[in-house]
Every structure is written in C-alpha cells, then in structure tokens.
Image (tube, rainbow, N blue to C red; front, side, top):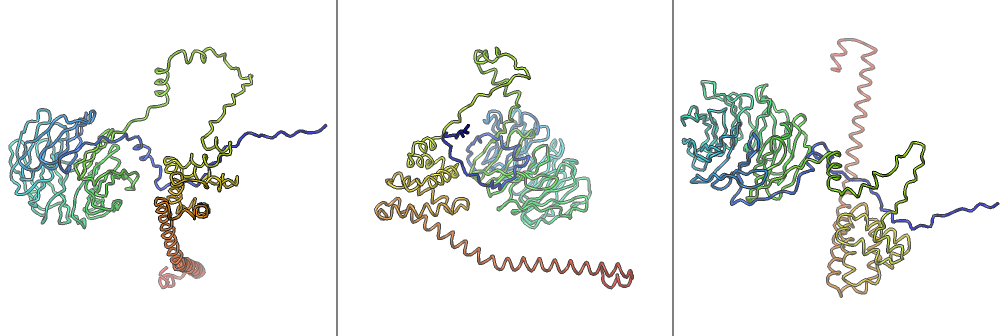
Length: 539
C-alpha cells in the first residue's frame, strides 16, 4: 500500500516584510486621551490673538481678545455669541471672574474695563496706569489686580473704582500676573526685568514676600492648585519654584520648546501643565513628575491657549489671527456601539440569526472557510503580469503610507526572476513613479541595501535614454545628490566613531579602576577597624 502526499497548490499571497516598529513617541495615557481630537475648526481674526480665556463655569464660553475687541464664542456652535468693542485702542488680556459673570479687559491706553458678560454692559473703567495694561486678574469678587507696562502692579476696588495699593518694585514692563488659587491676598507678577515677585495685600509695606529671578524676560506666571508651587515661563524655559522654602528653591526646569514660551494653563482636572510657544507646539506636562507626556503641532506661532475645565475642547490663539477649536470626541463604549448598530439595522437582517437553533456543548461546529480578499498586486502576480503588479504598488498613496508594500513586491519579483521584466519597457510616465520611490527611500536603512540593486538595474536598462527625458534625468540627478549626501554623512559618522569609542573605553576603564580601589579600601577597613585610618582614608 503506497502513501499519497497531498500538496497545497493554492496561490500564496505576497508576504509583506515586517520591520521593527520605530516609536519616537511613547503611547502614554495622555496620547490615548487626546487622540480623539476632531478636525480643528479655524476662525480668522483681524489681528494677532493676544489672549484666550475659557469661562470656569458651564457652558464654558471662550473670550478671544484681539485687535480692538473681545469676542465671546459659544464652544458648542464655534460661533460668536457676543462682541465687546468699546475700546479706543487695542484690547488686551480679557479674563473671566471665577463665577463667569464679569470679564476684565486691559487696553493699550492703560485702562482696565469690566463688563457684565450677560448684557455686554460696561460696568467699570479703572484708570490710573500710564502705559498699556496687558494683564488683569480678579482678586476674589470685590478686588482686581492689574499689571502694566508702566512697571507697576495695582490693586483696585471694583465697587468704587478706587486704587487700593500700588507695587513699584519692577524696573521693566510687567507682562505677566496671576492670583493664588488658595488665597486672593497673594498676587504674583512677572516682568521683562527677569524678576518675579509675590505680593501680599495684607502687608502694610510695599515689599514683596518672595523675590525670584527667572533668568529671562518673564512672559507668563501660574500658581499651581496647591498654592505652594509657582510656574514661570520666559525664553524657551519653564521653571517650577517651591514657595514654602522661601521661594528661591528651583524644583525643575522644563526645556521642551525651541522658541519663547508664551502661555501657561492647566488641564485634566488640574493635573497637567499646558505650555505653548512660538515654535507652534502645544505640550502637556504631568505635574507630579513634570515630564512631557503629549504634544500637538499647530499651523502658526501660538500666543495663547486654554483648555475647557471638562477637557471637552482646546482653544488656541495664534500670531497670524487664527483661532482654532479642537474638540475632543469621547469614544462610545462597546455597549453603546452595539445598541447604535442594532438601532440602525433593519430587523429582517437579523431574522435568520434569531431562528438559528441553540448549539449544545457536545455539537461539533464547523467554521466556514472564508476566502481572504486578494489584493490587486497579487492578482497580477498570479497571472505573471509583473509590470502591472509593480504598477499597483507604485501608486502615490501606497508609496507614501505603505512603502514596505512596494519593497515587498520588488523583493517578490526578484525571487521570481521577474524584476528585470517588471522594470524594463516603461515609458517616461510609468518610469517616473518608480524613480520617485527610489529617490524617497534610498536613504531608509530598512530598504537601502536592496534599493541600490534596483537603481543599478534601472540605470542598466535605461542608460541609452539618459539625456532624452528631462523629467527622469532630473530625478536621476536628485538620486545621485541624495546618495552623495548620505555617503558624506556616513563618512563623518565613521570618523567620529573612533574618538567616541576611545572616550567610552577610557570611561569604562576609569569606572573599573575606581571600583577596584573602593574594594581595596573596604577590605583594609574590614581588616583594621582603626578610627584614625578611617579618617585618614576619608572613606
């Protein structure tokens, strides 16, 4: 009796080469949280958006200050609900009170105006500053602190419009200010003279409680919710200070931006510090560790940004007048998706499913053999049409999003001895996509070794046409320039490898020597426990 071996003769699909995943950004909890941001809604203003502030109470209206007006947006419709335009000069730094009923706005003429948000009525005009007032902040419900370019910080009584106190310690523009969240008597001011002062209204003297030197012109200050730590932003650095130890103890320096940091705010139930910069980056930092956990890239330099208290949206104001609303869509749960699917589907589609008999544990269920969908390049490979198979993976979308597909088909053609057939006989229109793919990926370490062979074969096949087709000639020249540049870079790296190996080897040798010395000293002390010897060796 002879044994018959059966062989599977079905067509094998092209195996896509799997490369190690290069993850430059860690998939943190915050990246998962903010990945559900919808497409931004962009609004064009007349001038640079100086300030963006979100109302602390629902429905979280947004005050956008730019040019000579303040526009209050409804975040649900992303449209303007109110416009405050009673300004002779540019409006600056509109901010809500904690109850959302009042809005204070500075001005280029030095005055601070207070509006009733519901009726748009101008309630108070606080006059006294000699230069522009960029920042105003409510101190509780009855007082207001203003920070001006006349180098002063002033405290006002809202009901009488009288100036209660004036602090004159700064020697340059005061462009940053905030009030402590735990005590409305503590006020923080930051100036272009690099200093940050903490003032106490209850003191009889006008000297600051704490004096901090940031080291750069201070653009923004923020007191963290516990009231014991202060965040200052100036230059491209953000610094966190401990106020309990006298205010001069620097806890952490965050250098996550390449250009000037322009704004500080909080998000995610006040557990994340949000920083924005002129480098077009908006970054989230975890307050417990001050590590950068997520970042967003915007189209223009950012002047101000704010996150809704419930994290439902982010509003960003930019230097070219753009205002963007980025809404976060909360993903539905599995139960909600299933209920939605059943509600949309007609009943007759599930009639057959409901009439199926119940399967008992003893029954043998045979799964249906579902045929995998055949890709287009596999369809032509099965018919030995190699040129058409290569054309399918030279489409712009495939080359840009999935270059490994093109690479895998080229390797499969080489394995079938059909690579020459697929590349040969092409006109200028069909040859250009192949050359563009080679130009884009020739320096990719995953593909370069094999693509060099493909370039050699292409040059061999089309050497006679060089000089007759301007478009292909230009791409050939670009490939040569890119290869030359990569060669120079690799040569420089190889030249640096020798000195670097020498430094690392010397460092390891030094560590090893120190370790041996420490072991010898420990052994000596163990054998002779003499206090004089211990002091002499200073171990």
